[in-house]
Image (tube, rainbow, N blue to C red; front, side, top):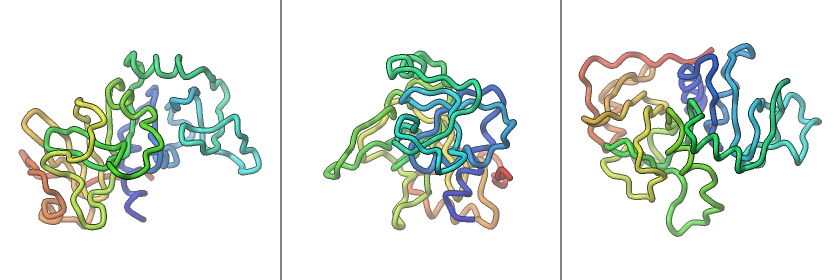
Length: 218
């Protein structure tokens, strides 16, 4: 099981029946693959659909039915499509239960940077700012390091996506909860030690109790 799969499977456990969920581009889109077909969770994409699903057959791919990243998707019975104005009204109006976003950095204040690296080509922010600010719950799904450098850091050096802190951070090593006091280490991955998580993090991690072991969806 690779790092991204571990992260996606753990995030899947955070979603519950009845949730309206937006999955960000990249790693977050994997989360839907680890939910049972009868999970009762509706997926929204900011380009204007509720009821999206993975593509059941590559032969059914069409240019008029894609996710926000342009990848072909399927639509479940009862799905509905609408324009971007309606889509962002749902997001900005606080009607999304959960958004799962990728991350470049999360800092000790729980703030997320995920939309650009200065000096590199940026295709656009997309819905990241709106999702990070408007969803009821924001989960950052990200690898713990990039080329050996920590991504859980003291202070974000990249442009922030939102001044709001995220509600949960899930990496291949740990589950971390940002709080008023700082970043709380809730869980560690099987076979990983607390010392390894601390060594891979620049930010200070709080441990009011012994961290649990990360579960993953089947």
